[in-house]
Amino acid sequence: MKKLLLTIPLLLSLSVSQAQYEDMPIDCLVEAIIQVESRGDSTAKGDRGWAVGVLQIWPIMVREVNRIQEKNGNDVRYVYTDRLSVKKSIEMFHIWREYYHSDSDWETIARCWNGGPSGSSHHNTKCYWNKVKKELNLLAYYH
Image (cartoon, rainbow, N blue to C red):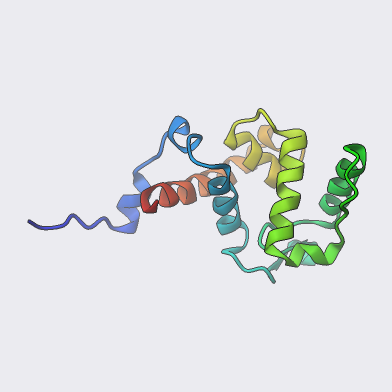
């Protein structure tokens, strides 16, 4: 019996439905965003040096996460160099996500991560979401 080998273009054309990927753990969304943002490079720098790390976090996001932490009565604070830590970058992402998007679908979360508070309404973040979906499709296929 021969094995069916899928080529990457064919694999990318197979689409995981929103219901299917939202049944995946939230870590899959984080991993997909990391792949789009930096391909996993913790030293990556973009946007003229403003965005740093695997999740391409801007200084304003570090300040916002610290504001959320203070508001929530949490003593943990982050510094700009924490963007170079995969673990701390993911922690900051989750703090932001839980505060602003605890009930949001994955598309809204991803598009706002890319485009700011009103990112889900910006046309240009739709292309970003399509890249994240491709990564989610790969994750769903290989897991």
